[in-house]
Length: 517
Image 1 (cartoon, one colour):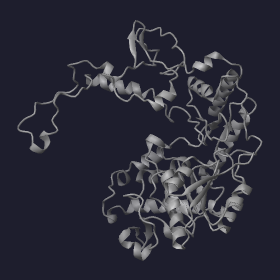
Image 2: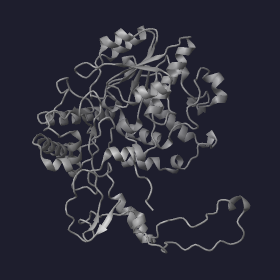
Image 3: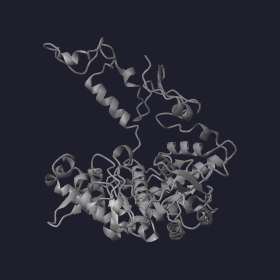
Image 4: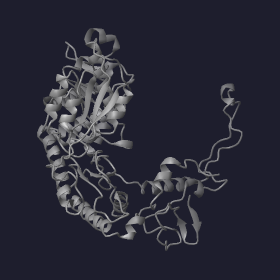
């Protein structure tokens, strides 16, 4: 809650320290505009629209919804409302303003060509319930993207339905369960290495499996000996992230797959970090049976609120017969159609069923295929090479001022991992992250992966220039020095953001989501 005073509007603070003096009456600092809540802006009796008085009788079915009194809406004119939301939008950080160095999230530039193609009426204005013969072009896009995904991964088939990465994980595990049941094999355990994404154990548990962890070695990779020793007739699958969340390629991936297959299990690979190896490595050649692909991370569709997401799952020959419905198939007449439930007995009798009402996310498919076609096979290979080059540039530029726990484990892949070891007593990763906000950068992923204390996971992606990386590196070096030298101002950062440091624990546990009366 903000409170006005003689100096203008002051934002309410947590325990991060007092706000620096605001020297303007308005509370603004140049073009950094202070913004109270819309309810604090509104005035009773003011309205931005003119509405006619209701005429005639209200239908009996609607009468019970009548309000006893008018809603407590803020009273603003139209210009005031537009300015309020425009000012709020200027407080948002976006990929179009600067880099998101979020490790394990791959927030990169979305080419405007992709957006232009996705907005073509034949893609943007169709409805999922239209007859198939009216959307053959859209189905063709889905089929062509599927062909690319199968080719790039060296797999036998792909399920395009899953809506996001975790949804794809569930799809892969349901395929694995169906395959095991088809051979009369009731297995109960899924092994998940410490270096895997956090959604992996959650998905396995949701699918009804018992999850057991596999430790990492000192160099941040899966302990092959520990994994092999745990394999047995109760192990349905291993879920492994490769490249893993320490930013490292699992060198023993083929040996892991061979061992799991020899024990009768199947291999699920979390393909969220496929952007680091696309065009360079085919997971199918490493013995992977199922792998989801986050289209936003590898093929540059919007992420998060810019979504919705899409997580196609590529499948090995062993799992392809169990893929969900629907899927695109070219018929004898050359026309590509979706195989639905009524056609499943003839074309796909072992499918485990349907995962969603409709077939994937058309906008994401269109953007991803545009990205692939504009790059081509050689361009996609360069995407991986540039992503790895940028991550190693960050790693080697900072390892003399920040602890890099796996810096000696060989080149990193898509992301560089640091820790807060060496900071002055009382200073932590959180302080450096808050200081980074003052430098104009969104903080990196912090405190993940859990295998490293005070983790800072930085993923520059392939879309950042050397000049942009140099600015980021310079800021990180300065902040690292301040943390080592116990600069007290770092404990109360950020100082230049629209809001100062919040009490994050209370914000998470006791959020205030309604306007106080």
